[in-house]
Length: 267
Image 1: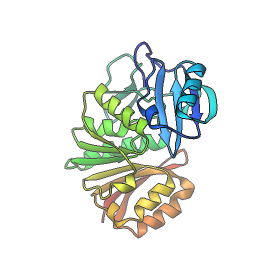
Image 2: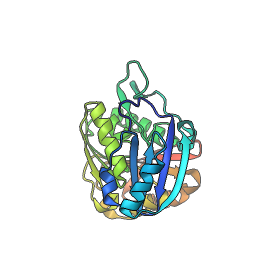
Image 3: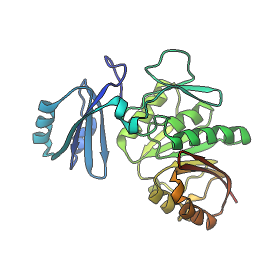
Image 4: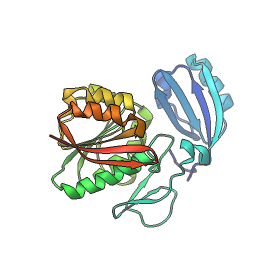
């Protein structure tokens, strides 16, 4: 995440490990962007090269350095550079943009910079659903990433519970809520282990395997509405086959750049 004296991202200095250590979760350094930890591996991101520091961490925590790389910010996330955009009338921008905006966010190095077709479709479907049914009160954001979906629904005055398996995503989402003086419950954990989600809306912009696993659990269908994405067009037949067995109906199917987003209602 950005903190003084850094006001924007230019380069990511990346150190990836085959293993991890719990002390790295609370490790701090003035040039640290964040520590990514998932599936038994760990990755440190810095604004500057940190070879000597990383060597000392390797020795201290018995880490196995597997990757050392430098990636320009302009090439990160498939070269999707975060920029201001609108969802309905709500103006959203990365924190380094000056001007009047309704929401500001720090994308850090996690998913949810607002430029990916799946994120864009879920944001716009959220706005349309908000206008379609103003009685929605409680929203679950599964796999929250940077928390950009959580920010939108919290800005709309709804109670939001956000979950992510990656502790860096949890930190970034909490940071972005604080930037906007908004509140939501942000939980670190496996979305499969927190079922059922009893509320009005479930947002699930996830990978296909996890989506299919959730769709196969009857406990998942505890909300009135669902917005699903993370699906490429070739996956639609498999996803729709799973939906046909579930107690939901498809209200809308959106497509952009070979990606698909479904708006569902409980049948």
